[in-house]
Amino acid sequence: MGNLRVKTNKVREIVASVLSVAVLAFSAFNNMAVFAATSPAKQATPSATSQQLKVIPVKSDLSIAAGQSDTVPIEVVNLASSAVAVQAIENDFVAGSETGEPALILDPNSYAPSHSLKRFMVPISNLTIPANGSVEVPVHITVPKTAQAGGYFGAVRFTPAVGNVSSSGASLGASVASLILLTVPGPTVEQLTLTDFSAQQNGSTASNFRNGKQLSLFLRFQNKGNLQEAPFGQINVQKGKKVIDTVNFNQDDPKSEILPDSARRWVIPLKGFGKFGKYTVSGTFTYGTKGQTIDISKTVWIVPTPYIVAAIIAIVLILLLCGGSYVFLKSYKRKILKSSRRRY
Image (cartoon, rainbow, N blue to C red; front, side, top):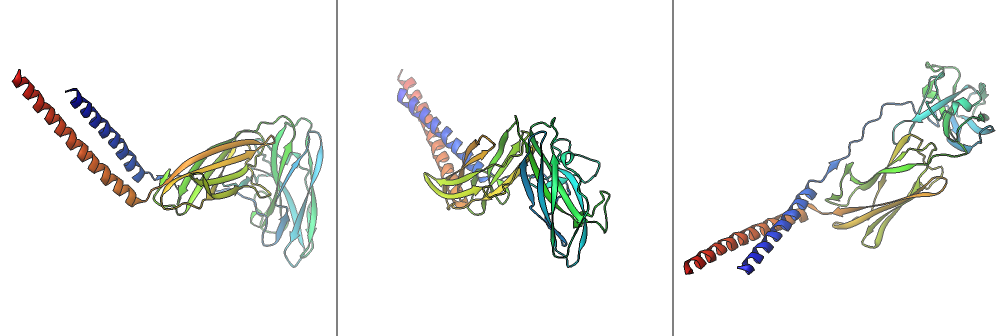
C-alpha cells in the first residue's frame, strides 16, 4: 500500500511538471508582443542644408563658466551663383521626437521653459554672402553670473532676407540651422536611465523568435538630470561563451546626445543568430563626466515553429500516457482495497 501511494504521488508530480512545460510551449508559440510606438506630433526641425545655404558645423558643444563669455564660429556657405542677403535668427529648441530631432521654438518672443540658450546669445546682424562663397559668423554667448550649472541649448538659423516669410520673420523652408549645446560647469545632476533593452523582429518585441532573421535591439534612455548626455558603449551577442556579434554603440564623433528631461531611442541591427538555440544579448554603456556605466543582458531564444509543434505533440502524448497511468494505478489501488476487505 505504501509503495502504491509513492508511485501515485510521483505520477502526479510528473503530470504537474508536464503541464508547466506545456504552458511554456504554448506561451512561446504566442509570444509576439507588438511594441506600439506613439507617433510624435509634427515639429519644426532644423536643417543643415537648403537649396541655397549650408552651415558648418551642424552642431557645436562648448563649456562656459558662469559670468564668462565665448564665441562660436559658424561658417555660412552660399550654394547659389549670385550673392544673397541673409538674416540670422536665434532660437531655443526642445527635444522633439525620441529619435533625436530637436524642435525649434520659432516664436521670436518665446523661450524654452528651461535650459534656454537664446537668453545668452547676442543678436546677430544681417549679412551678405558672395556667390559660391562663404562667411564666418561669430556667435557671441555671455553666461550671467547667476546662471545655474547644467546644460543649455539653442540654435542659430540663417535664411535669405528676401522671400516668403512666416510669422516668425523667416522662411523656414529655406533656412538652415546650426545647433549649439552649452555646459555651464558646476554641481550638476547626471542621471541617465536605460528604460528599455529589448530584442525585436520587424518591430515586434519578444524573448523568443521563430528564426534569427532581421533581429534588432531596441534601446531607450531617459535623461532625468540637468545636463545633456551622450551614452556610448558596446553590444555583444553570445551563444554560450562564444561572442558571435559585436556592435559599437554611439562611438563616432559627434556623438548623439540626450537632452535633459527627455528620452531617446535607438534600434540596433543584430547578426549572428542561427536556426535554433539560446543566445545572450548584453550591453555596457558609459556616460557622464565621471564615467558612469550601465550593464545589462537579456536572453533570446530562437525556436522554429516545427520544433514547437513537435514539442507540443510530445507533451500531449506524455500527458495522455501519464493520465492513462494515473487512471490505471487508481483503478489498481481500488481493486487491491476491495481484495483486502474481502479477506478480512
